[in-house]
Image 1 (tube, one colour):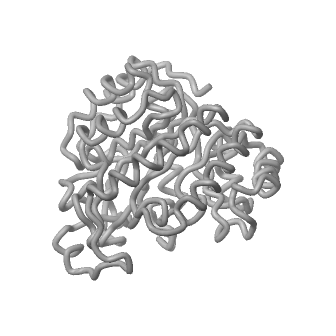
Image 2: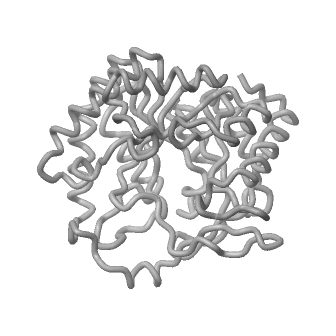
Length: 324
């Protein structure tokens, strides 16, 4: 497995040094312009500059995660989406030219969403959480109400346009489930909210570039049998990327936990990934903010990642799973 670290932008700082000190070699990046001060990765020279920065700092940039530029016109099917899809295709072409082979994407117009960001966890560490009753009090977005059926239509159209380019570029598109996995949020339908929805998404194309980011915490909040899903999707070669985190609660009301004190038997799941033949990128996700941290970047502060990555490395060592 490729133990990886998620970087926001391309500006080296203390986190980059700490990642190296933890022995991290593989970088997953979000290179949106608000993070880099440069053009999005649909511009070849901009992407090449970022890749060179990562290489200079000792990391192999192997993938992207999240929206690398504004994607809501694509997700909601409004005017301008075809222009944005052409940019997306250029980005895929650029990734192929530069050997960046993974793109973790989502189809959530409201993104990963939490109603609380400072819930106390063990010894006062801070985690995020979601409560549907609180979410239902929020206003609609500027897009008004958008049905899940419409989002499915937009997703199918998106795949039909970008998968041929991804195949040609040798890039794997790894769909991330909706987090939280609730049917509607601020009036907009959310579609990847169950294992059955994931199966439907995979059925839209048999392209070798069409697969999953297996975010086990999201499947946990769905109430799914996570271990069985790892074998189901993994045995078909459709798990391209794994996010390791844990949560307690249900889709309507949950909170994050430390990696070691949620309901999940992490060692057992690691065995499942190994037995299913998964050998791709895997990373720590949605960590608590710990003592001395600001919690400004909730879920992605560094001390929680130090704990999470160390915990993951320990399990991998105990199970003789190499970090390749």
